[in-house]
Length: 565
Image (cartoon, rainbow, N blue to C red; front, side):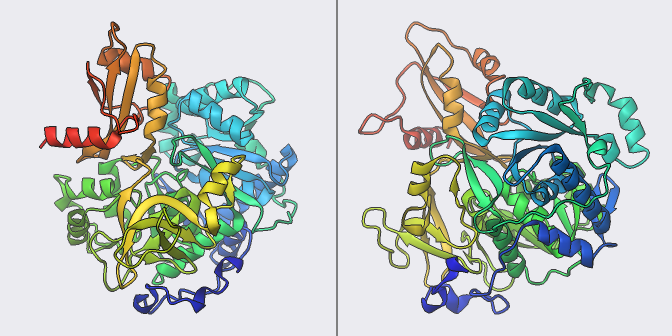
């Protein structure tokens, strides 16, 4: 591949310590994403594929539904490059729709179901999404009904939630949760999933250029908090899946189970849970959202082998008062990402489960996996591990542009086949992010003599709360809409249950009143629940600033830390 040219000629520091079973310069295939599913459905048709609240599908059934939906999408007018959004929690429709869109020639646009209307409107217009797939649940449908009238969105594909449930849960849901079900209007702008798949299941074959054609538009706040669509090509997505499979080389194809509690619309779960499971023909045990008790019960009952998660989830399990009554020993491998993994959390989880927990590192722009600790051998405390196959990680001195020596600090920069094509319609941001042919992550790191990397500081100030990303500037922009706010700083502060929570410090305009309750009410329709600050501190004095007059997040966090010692 072009991204790997001359890689093997360099003496990269990780090569001498690289896992024996993994070949760093291995050939990584270039092909359309949907061929991963086609291979699995052909070779493992009768093996279990998806378990959703006890209703199950095998790979042959999943493949048939994907083909029928792809044909239905083409009949609707989906052609190469048409943007189709997914506004779904974890459920079988997500997996089916994702692969059907790609097979029809379209581009998947992942949407967070927790987004409020203002956020959805921006992403729909920026991405040029014309069709949206969602469920007939009121909490989702009401937002999309508004988007259908207020944005360029032209069609809604409505999937029946009760159809995804087993008997008798489907009957009980209709009776007990009647108020949660949406009333759908009679409109040609609404297409029912069951009608969409009513065809012969033979979609037209689409000619794709995997290196150039975009498979997924994955939105990220970036360093500024401004939402940008990372263009992930078919080659990017396939490469990262293959890299993950090579790293977890002990997987038994068609015989193991993947626990899916991380949201599939997030790039971490898209690759490390959904696509990796498809590639290896693992059975996906999916929950619509993470609930601690439910997750423990399912691990105890259904015996999954893989459990990707964020540190806050592992920590919550460690601290569950009734942990001893659950048998979690089926777990073999857990990959931790999204936030730094405390050594104590890793050690406790491994003791409680017998599972190997490996910390990794990645970004939306790298589809996302860049580095992971080995599944066998040394896991250095605090390290994000080594680069996955075909990936070059270099630490660059921002002042000189040169590679720093081992143990020196530099900006972590990445080259590899999983690196995005660029940001949609953002040429300047793309040029900055991919300067010199490297992805500049904005994170400061060091590397030791064995090629293990360590994150020193996160420049991006991203807040990870309960596995969801919150961008401080995005929250600040909403707060500044309040007429009584003069200045504010938003940052993440430590929280045992969630990893971090959102906190804001505010100075009101002189002579203006501002209460905590007033601010929370004001933000209800401007931010999602996870973004609304859980701690609000209103000050009468000016907030701390840097020497050049910028509000200083670093200083206010230090103040907060000293105050709460």
